[in-house]
Each structure stands twice: as structure tokens, then as C-alpha cells.
Amino acid sequence: MEFVVISGEKDSACRTVANRLRAHGYRYFSPELFFVDDFGDLHLDPSKSQQAIEWCAHHAEQEIEHHHDVVVQGIYFNSELMKKAESVGYNIVVIRCDEGLDDVLNAKVQSLVTIHEQNNPSLLRRLFG
Image 1 (cartoon, rainbow, N blue to C red):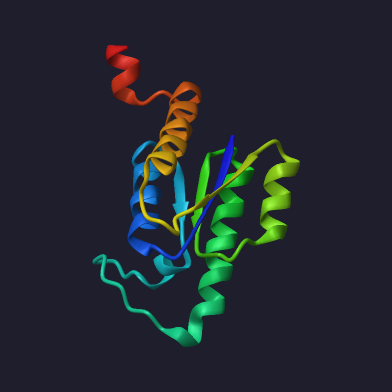
Image 2 (image 1 turned 180 degrees about the vertical axis):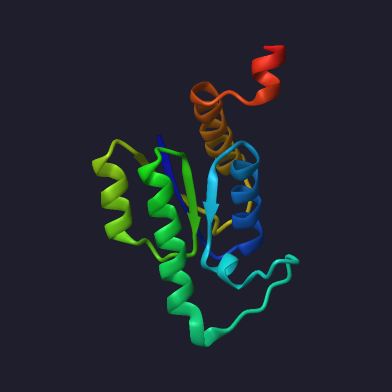
């Protein structure tokens, strides 16, 4: 099981990495999701940023309890959450997106996708091998 922490200065690269992993079945959480309404619109409220971080950590913790691969972005290296994941057998992977998407970053993401697909084959892979 993988617990992936995405951080870095290049927000667009971080989102791309998160979306690629999410598309392959990783459960994705970011404090930003706390501010998305039912229509998919983002309504940031800086006064609730701590509440958003706690919401993200809570949902990630629930997924850990259910042994799902998890991706978190923007929770500032919650060491308590990482320790919990590690204590129940998760591999902790930190992905830094400071330089944007390069070959090394793409290779790391692809290896995570491969690991996830081996343990949790997608419907298409199960049907068509």
C-alpha cells in the first residue's frame, strides 16, 4: 500500500501528478477540496484553512483504515498521519514538484501506477488482460 505526499512550488505539476494517480485508483485528498461545492466550483475561505487541513487528514486517515492507496497534497507533511500509515504497512512516498514534470518525476509516477495496478487491477485490465 502506498501513501503518497505531493508537494512543491509548481502547482500545475503537482495537480498533474495527483490527477494521474487518482485516475489509476489512488484516493486523493487536498485541503483545497474542502472548498469545492456540489457543482465543482471552488470557494476558498482563508479563515477556514486549518479546518480544511483537518478535513483532509481525517479523510486520508479513513482511507488508510480501509487499506486504500492514498495521495495527499498540501497538508504540510502531517507527520502523525504519515506515522500511522507507516505503522499499518504503507510505503511513504514523497513527490516534490519543484521543477515541473521531468523524466525523473514521470518515471516515479509511472512506477506508482504500475505498483497500484499490480495490486488493484483496473476493470479494463481484468476484462481484457
